[in-house]
Length: 124
Image 1 (cartoon, rainbow, N blue to C red):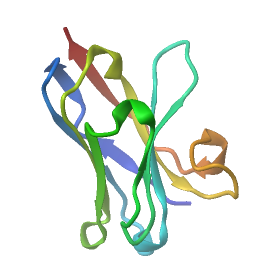
Image 2 (image 1 turned 90 degrees about the vertical axis):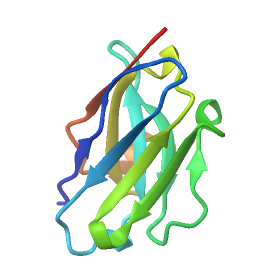
Image 3 (image 1 turned 180 degrees about the vertical axis):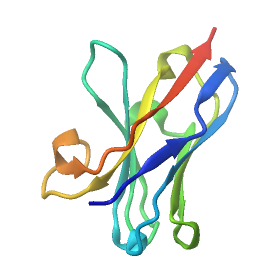
Image 4 (image 1 turned 120 degrees about the vertical axis):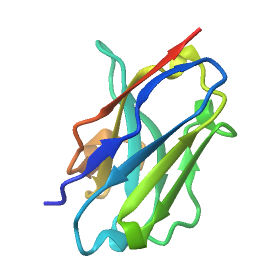
């Protein structure tokens, strides 16, 4: 099983930016489709974005389109989530995971190898 490690979370004011990283030591990283999700305590885990192994055709949930950018550097075994124009409602724990099972890209049930998460807090 792939082990993913998220990084880059923190506290930022509304309108600011953060860049999250999702790294692994796995040798077949370029073959993995990776998704970013976020979760607020007491709520379901929410799909944010996903990127396929080649890096083309990224896909976003509507609430982050135009503000977030998912990208990957397969040489560094890392997927990034650049978050700009952050809003207080973006506050959550952010997780990355591997798309493992046939199913909707937006469903957490389609993913495995979840990282431990990184906290993002946006103050108003």
